[in-house]
Length: 332
Ligand code: GLN
Image (cartoon, rainbow, N blue to C red):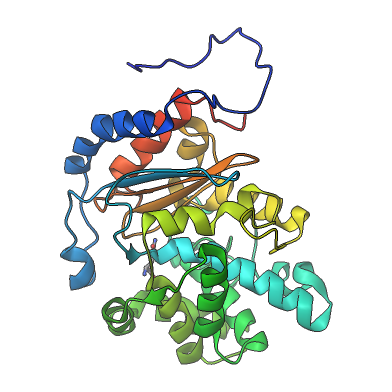
């Protein structure tokens, strides 16, 4: 039962702005207190020791408003590898690079080689890729991100370096890769290598499997705190413009399309459930982070390592569900 129920179903909303008067930090704290224990129902990712050793009781929840206000509870400044959340940033970088360098536009560069449909399959599944002749369903699953990395290799001398530069611009401070994660990912990427090999066989890679994987594992190892994660994504809730600096990062139309892809594909085979229960574009990662966009108002980032069977943070998902309900944030 919600402590702050949604508006009455038949009440007419007169504004899309969430309540500015509420003590938002107190709301975050109540949500955190309510959902934290649900982490006990999940399991931390264990395919590499550095993730298996994560403290399952870590928890952070941050609301970063476009007007500069920021509300944080829990371990908000503790860095963790953002893993698959980086797939959005790689897509953004690919869009920027392909627009900037050859003028052909992101549409030509990307959408001939990967789709924009939810997969309904686990993020690392090989099955669909074989049936669909090496064209990944979308850029939010592993196969799709590998194609995005292949495109980035056409445009960047140093894909990890350019990724870092973009993220540092967005968060306004230095960030880094977690080298232990990067090395461990390198050593265990058998399934990602299989995905890349399958796509190479279908002529959907221009660079070697090793080059593509090297860019991919670096992105997985990008280490951000929950606070930095929330900040980094604000431009996507602001039609492509960084609200801190006023810098245009992406065109408004592509920023909206990134949000659409996050909504439909960002949480893998739980995307329908997230859209139904949270009602916001979200992207999750296997280290337990999730970032959500509240278009025109804010971003929300949450971190709690234990995952459900779809690879999404159990307590993170509940926190978003509860916060979106209390503040009436659904985009629908
Ligand atoms: N490193 C993980 C992998 O490549 C990332 C997946 C995720 O965060 N969902 O499978």
